Image 1 (cartoon, helix red, strand yellow):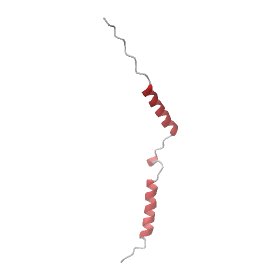
Image 2 (cartoon, helix red, strand yellow):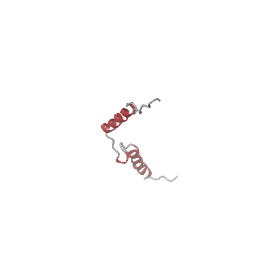
Image 3 (cartoon, rainbow, N blue to C red):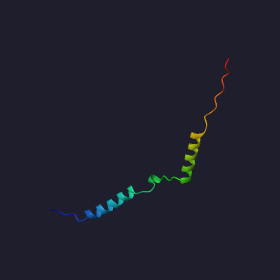
Image 4 (cartoon, rainbow, N blue to C red):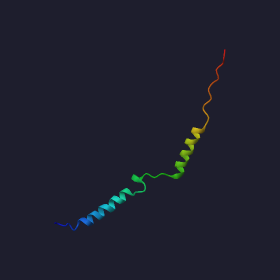
Length: 61
């Protein structure tokens, strides 16, 4: 049986590289500010809770 002595080194470096790619905090440089997200969520909530636009009253004849 032939044993490759460099396989463990290559496997270790490849495993470390894969772990680094999977464990990235913000993929592709996308950073989200918590305050901006909270502000957007609050605005969306206010729009949902706000009363509907008043309709013009019809004049019964």
